[in-house]
Image (cartoon, rainbow, N blue to C red; front, side, top):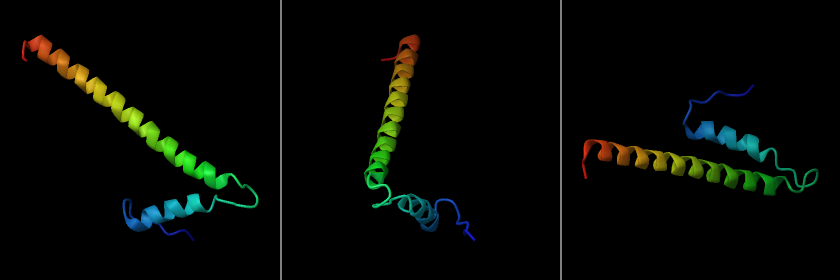
Length: 72
């Protein structure tokens, strides 16, 4: 039976990390650890790209509002 922990608790994240760690198999899939680490880095890069794009959209919106209102 899998315990259901409250979202956001340390126990909740422990279960998530445990599932990922269980995928690492040095004998059957020797690249699995490298793939887990690279996947983690790819996820970080993806979120950074998303938030950078969003920040650029907000900067453009701010500029347009300033221009439309004649505010410096």
